[in-house]
Image 1 (cartoon, one colour):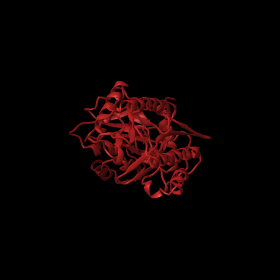
Image 2 (cartoon, one colour):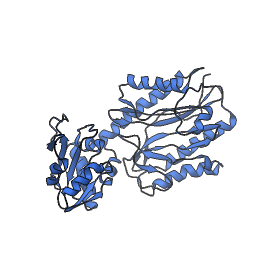
Image 3 (cartoon, rainbow, N blue to C red):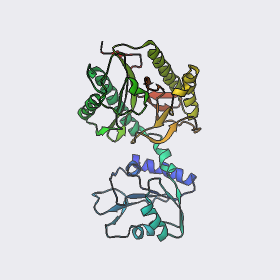
Image 4 (cartoon, rainbow, N blue to C red):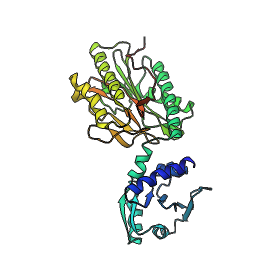
Length: 359
C-alpha cells in the first residue's frame, strides 16, 4: 500500500464513523494529499469523489494535463454541463462535501441528484491531514531546518540603517537559495513599537538602538510549510523589555512541556496564558497560542482557550505566546512541535536565550 492509498483508507474510516459513504473533495491541496496529483483549477471544476466502496473518481477539465493518475477519471470540457457529468457517479443518500466546494458547482449538482442530500464532510479529510505520516514529518523537519538556518543568517544580516522591508527582501533571497518554492506566509519583521502589532507588515522603519526585533518567518519547501518566531534586541535591551521577553519565553517552554498525546488543546493554551497572566500581562497576550500547519501555514485546528479537543500523536502545530504593549513593545517566541505519545518533538533548534544583536 502506498502513502496515498493509506491516506484514503484513513479518510474512509472517518467517513464511515460520520455515516458517509461518499465525499466530494474540491480543495486542490486535499486532492493532492489523497492522490499525489496537483492542479490549480482556477474557475474550472476539479474534484475527487472518495467512496467507501473503493469506486473513487477524479473529475477534471480536458485542459488539465493529468497524465496517468491511477484513478478512474471523468473528463469534461468547457462546453459540458459539469452537473450532468458528475450526477451519474453520485449515489442516493448523503453526499459529504468539503468546505471549499463552490456553490456554483454544488447547487447544480444537487439539483441533478434529487435523491442525494449534501452535508459538510470536511473533517473527514482535515482530521486525517492533522496527523502527519512519516513522509510528511520528514518534509516538515527539512522545512524547519531551512527556516532555522535562514533566521540565523537574517539575524547576522541586520545592520545600522536596515529597514524592515530590506530584511524581509533579504529573507526571500535566502529561501530561493535553499530551493524553496517561496514563503509560507508574508514574513513579519518588526522593529520597536511596530512589534506591538502581532501582524505588522514590514515597512521602511529603520532599526534603532534599544529596539526589540520580532521576526516571524516561514518557508515552503516541497509543498510543506515552516513557521517560527524569535525576538531579538538591537545593541541593548531595556531591562523592562528584557523581563517581558523572559516571561514570553517561559510561557513558550511551559506550554511545550504540556504537549503529549491525549492532552486538551485548551489546557496547553492555558499553561502559557496563565503564566503571562500571573505576571500581570494577560490582557496583552491577544491571540490564541497556536495553529495547525502542514501544506498550508494555517490548517484546520488550533491551540486556543476554546478548543477542548485532545491532541493526537503526529499532530503538528505552533506554540507562540506573546506580549504586546501598544505603541511601545512586542515579543513573541514560536516553535513548531510534533506530538508524540509521551511528549513532543520541537522542530526549531534556534536558541531562545535573550540575544542582543549589533554588538
